[in-house]
Image (cartoon, rainbow, N blue to C red; front, side):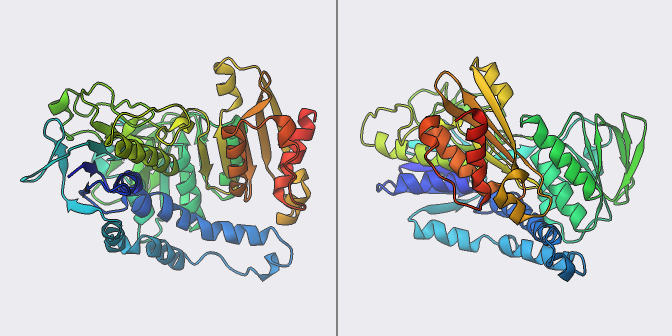
Length: 463
């Protein structure tokens, strides 16, 4: 075969599909479910758990609709809807898609067995052109005494649970922590969330503050600056969590949401001169640094690039195209070409699907200044936009635009508020296209929509 892709998640699927479109023969190896983490234990089920609560909360913000709401969520129906998105953890439909795309599937655990060789059980697959590692990432469980031995939840257990835990302790204030804390709180859990610092580190500070306020309004006990010092559990009984502030919390389940690391252990990296379990560094076409011959690629979480499904799929498409083109001969790979994931460095969009949503792309104000840019930061309260006042009474939210004054282009945008996720692609286009502010002024937002915030940001800037 021409190409072997290890990992059939959405990133690996995109690499394989793009490479195969030109006639290359491609084999995809998967040890779990075709469709990967996003389809079964992350993006899709977590958003399904959140959506019903968001719809109910939105109705309660509108007179006329609020009076019609007479009860809370039906947790069993929400969980059933979640399960429908995972096809009850059955990957047959996604496996059928691979076949329809002309891709071969080999089920089993893969490891490198020397240059261009992949061993799956007793079978050795030899790739003429490329091997692509798209094995994703795994949760990191911090070294807290008693925690690892107490069988805590990771995101997998939290998104696939069949019942609502009475009491849930969440460790971590990142995206997974805040999303699942809100989801389970709205489904009826008594939730405690502990984070060493503020929520949503790496985002604009106001984003974490607004989300923290919303979590508290939902009844979540948000404890900032607190860390577990010991966790104890007898059998399958409740957890006792001792915190650095001297307090104790009892919980029926404990969710670890403290980050993920690339899944490179056991991949056989040592057979090609790399460190087993080590991190992989790639160029913008996905080629792994430090491997001779230009045949080993890595995409998605395993590559050290942004750990976001959409960004991994984007890089996967570039890698698949580059592999196909290189099979025919040398290629040029300038920035912003179809063979390079250039946006990874400049315009990475991300949505935190809490209520309020956090939608951010590009650089925060602090990141822009760290890069030495002469920036102007423009903030605007989204609730002052007519379209937002129609969406919800008492709409609360903030927009921030970060401008590179030397080039007079936007390098970062953050929106926090109800229904702001759909604003984000306009910001992404503006940053990728480096649209001058004077030209962006002529992109007239429809009235009355929340998108009018763009006009208000530009007016506040001084246009």
